[in-house]
Image 1 (cartoon, one colour):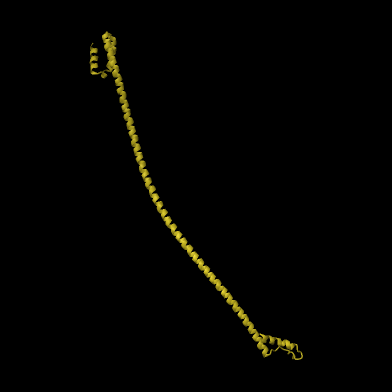
Image 2: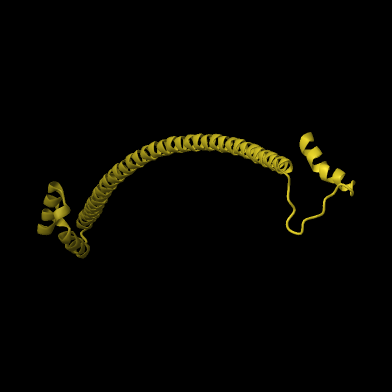
Amino acid sequence: MSEIDETVREPEQEAEKPEQTPEKPTGEPQLSPRRRSALVMYLAILFAVAFLFVALMMVFEAKRLKTMNEELQDSSQKTSASLTSNINALQAENQKLSEKNKELTAQIGELEDAAAAAETEMEGLQAEIDRLTAEAAAAEAARAEELGVLEGQIGELTKRAEDAVAVSELLHQALAANEEGDLDRLQELLDQIEELKDLLSPTEADIYEELKIA
């Protein structure tokens, strides 16, 4: 670099010596071989420095891109691993939910079967209750009918007993009227006894017949 600087400074030194400066040519300025070689060297060094700078920048950029790529790959791998883990967890949870759903479906089926069986049993019990109710109603009706018949028979027997007592009383009155010689009263009593003579005992019937002859 010092040689190039000295070469560049030479025109300045020569410019300070006007008496040594040759007359300027009328055409393009001519460079001496030494100056031309120094200029080429200078330009080559500049290009080399520029190329080195660009190369360094490219290396730094490549390193930065490589680092970013590695970070992205690492992040992608971590994300992929996280997603895979989440997917596996979701699949496991889905499997659990599916199994739970199957269990619940089975339980619902069992409950439905139990409900159907209970409904069938209830229908059977209701039919049995209806049958027993009908039988109880029929038995109650039969008992009521028998009770009515018994009440009728009791009423009839009670009336016959009352009539038997009454006809016995009439027979005693007829005997008294016969002893007293009251024939009209006797005949009246005998007419009343005639309607109820079936209720007389054999002894009372014999007495009734004797009173009629008398």
